[in-house]
Length: 252
Image (cartoon, rainbow, N blue to C red; front, side, top):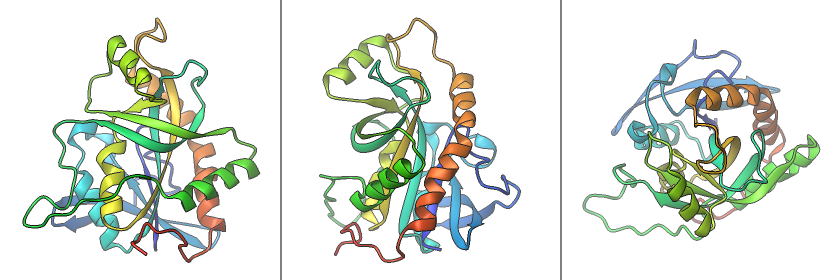
């Protein structure tokens, strides 16, 4: 299986078997957990990024184990979904965005496989796979979904939410949405030559754009509502894509 779906809050039961069939994959960086998913004659791995039972907060996720584990399993293409807060008042809760760029404000996470005895500088001019992004746009049109392309994801350390002042700064920097898991996930995937695309689901307006306090329960509820829609979008790409990659993510 060369496909994987990675998902977080509110989506850990998106795969048909839920978490009942989770498998432990041992890697040099620790363990990750995946389950096999087959639909319409195609197969993929499903990886709940927060681990079994959604117990690992974003700043403690073992991103290296997760991505290396998929690599060990032969995965070359990753479709990811994440809950995001909107930095744009026109992007209301329930909106879908296709992430094109990121701005990294994380601090403490191991974010590379090349941190010992080797100098490697990964090009990240275009972090997300253009081929997968194109397939997602096509599938969204086929499903008549409004998927806003070109989103800039501001990744914060967490687990706290952002202040209103930080949100104002992120907007000045050109951010579209804010979340806590995009980095180093995409960086690690690109280091291993994997194609990676990310769909963000807007669960709330960011701090200062609404008077309502931010709530994790609201995030999980909103993501759960979008679970079936995301399944159709992501699995639709897997079901219709050619087996051969035509991008340069693998170093061609």
